[in-house]
Length: 132
Image (cartoon, helix red, strand yellow):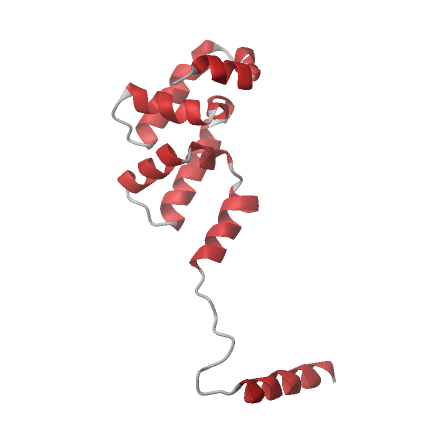
């Protein structure tokens, strides 16, 4: 972990009290079930703004991801270890819409027993009926 690179890239880390880092590290260790201190450092170094996100903000995203994607603890930990920035994304503006899109089955444009012409007729009739 190159903390020098992190300090240069995120100088706002200097505006935070050192005392606030320890509880945040413990929170991440607890909710992600991280076993080693190096894992906590890895997650934080992957996305330093975790140090100034609120506990509620982080916990709500962890809960959302685990619930919506039906992740067990190991899957959640692997996801955050792979992409710690996911905890900085907005639930409403980013995570929820993407999860809904990715997990919603694709609707077939027409049933196999229908011909494209019969589908066009239905669409045209529906459009005409809805316009009158």
